[in-house]
Picture (cartoon, rainbow, N blue to C red):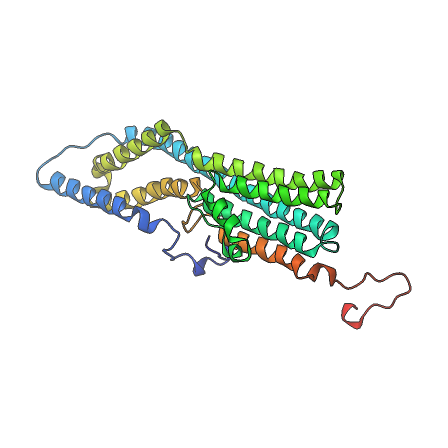
Length: 308
């Protein structure tokens, strides 16, 4: 994902990265070259044009199709962001409960649960991208278990089972009771729900018929547009075709890029940054930072000068 200030046009108005220019430049160039050829043929050989009414009607329908395409893709993008927001929250909740219920009694078990939770986040990110990796935290985990996780049929599920086993071991050792176990394991269950919802987005693209029909309509519209504009615009038809094809192909390509928000494209979700946030937040509970907060002042206590 590209960070930018939406209030300052001049800083990104002429950017190329992330603006679909590279992706559509060949299509736009080919369409414009076709318009140049049509103009030359009309001037020296042909004298045929078609009524602009047809393109006006088709253009309206095509615009609606493109709007639906973009809206459907953005819904998937925003749904993916909400799901990863839920993943961040549930990993924090799991670490929060573990730091209260386990950290003081068995710091090593708390650290083990936190490390597996961090590994789960990285593993889920790579799984959505068709890869297998547990991230940098893998170096702090038992290598035999890491190898089994990477060989599992569904790596995030294997890690979730491992997390649940750590919680179950804590109950058997008397560190937590059954109700506390259920509360902690509920966070693990929600993580599985979230990864399943993300996989639904990845494995269910927009209907094939809709995408193919839209692209055929785009090609037919842009390649016949010069014939509709020649009578009224003359040589300016070339510039008009360039502008229209740039707008239409760009809108369609935006929908393509954000349709799967978990990939490596410039406009996809910053999953590396999210996983790094999870890692830093959860590691702080191992390092004991959560227990180093200043005490809350009671009535009659003087506030420190920095707080006044």
